[in-house]
Length: 440
Ligand SMILES: Cc1cc2nc3c(=O)[nH]c(=O)nc-3n(C[C@H](O)[C@H](O)[C@H](O)COP(=O)(O)OP(=O)(O)OC[C@H]3O[C@@H](n4cnc5c(N)ncnc54)[C@H](O)[C@@H]3O)c2cc1C
Ligand SMILES: NC(=O)C1=CN([C@@H]2O[C@H](COP(=O)(O)OP(=O)(O)OC[C@H]3O[C@@H](n4cnc5c(N)ncnc54)[C@H](OP(=O)(O)O)[C@@H]3O)[C@@H](O)[C@H]2O)C=CC1
Ligand SMILES: O=C(O)C(=O)Cc1c[nH]c2ccccc12
Image (tube, rainbow, N blue to C red; front, top):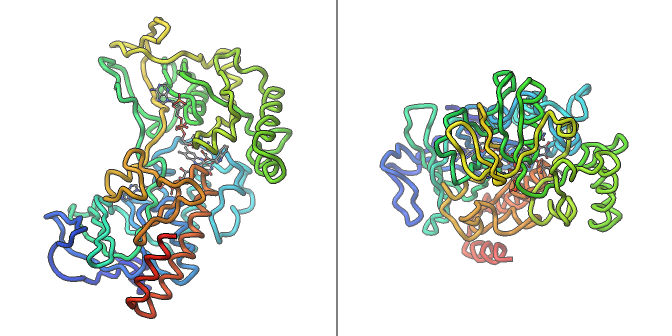
């Protein structure tokens, strides 16, 4: 598949490094390897907002890159794994990617999924980022003997052959939401329909059905609302304490207001203010089974990454009883569930809104920078973007698209410095300096 990187003399030129499978210490090649390709610039794994933003920032600094994605389009998480009526829940200004013009005139304050996808398509076009699509990275490891990352990608679009890319830099951009998280217990003998919110598209197929939504983060709340608007009898499992905030306070986005206030006041004060406003706007939500944590919403977001619910209408349905709040599930029965309070209820379908996981441990053979337990960088924002030996991570800050923009800018600046040096030709002194620099 021709790419602009090849055309432009950048990453991914189909230049055979040498024949046969890699055999270095850090080798990731399998018997199925058909060829090896040397990539002059970084290899970026993932063509979502994080991968695209990093490729664009690199390009702006004159560094070519090769973006790989397992799916057939850019921004596949948004295109394929979100529901139709989804809108960004942060105002558009907080969801723009670096170096790009704002959303086109006429875009609403909270763009729809399709508008965001169109924005990402236009962004990729504007920076001529043409990822190699249908390329699933199966394994990647640093080969210390040659100082290169070996990245083995399965060609899912073609006959299933494998290419091993060799690059000095590896940027992990596979995201915080790479795979659906399901409860380990499973659904036992339950015979009804089961899905995860990442496969949920629209509510009309559930009209007239009894549906149980498991989980009450932003996905659980929004899918419950959508189901309800489509005539499904909806129950939502709330097993723990949660913060629900109005999406807007006095016509200003709650997120924007928080960002502004945090410039002036400590986070505890801002949280206290948000909770006062939430109480005035939403009332006492504890009455409806939504108990608030003792710690404030922004403090929780900062320390754990758990996003407060930004309410777009589910709370009204909870208050009027159209969405029923139910406790944690004790076990599944053939036709429904038994809750921890001993009550049993039948459901036609169960939708798990139980969140997502990183998939990094399944393919990256590295455990110093990335934790093998959760697949996130061990260091938190603002230090989560750079590891050792030319390894980088973008989009793992738990700070949404703003975190992505920060990472992209930092990574591009760092690689551009090394790129300029590498054009001058590596020397032993450079290698020493490289190690020292990385250790800082
Ligand atoms: C429903 C939803 C709504 C959100 N709304 C907002 C919002 O309003 N504002 C905000 O700031 N943030 C929001 N976020 C958070 C975050 O901004 C998005 O999840 C965003 O898509 C993250 O971008 P990303 O590029 O890091 O990850 P993704 O968009 O998930 O992109 C990762 C890419 O990596 C590819 N990939 C994964 N594994 C491999 C592999 N092994 N080989 C090759 N390719 C691979 C995937 O196919 C995918 O294309 C939302 C998240 C979700 C789930
Ligand atoms: N419009 C938008 O922009 C939207 C944005 N998003 C974003 O996408 C990201 C992912 O959100 P989401 O998919 O909601 O995932 P989250 O991880 O935020 O929420 C998962 C929820 O599932 C609950 N849960 C997990 N396991 C179980 C279980 N076994 N039984 C009962 N409950 C369970 C969790 O409860 P507990 O706390 O007890 O573990 C939590 O409430 C977030 O950043 C979110 O803000 C999502 C939807 C829409
Ligand atoms: O959509 C998300 O989950 C985000 O991560 C966006 C986001 C970053 N910081 C926040 C604080 C409160 C609510 C949402 C976010």
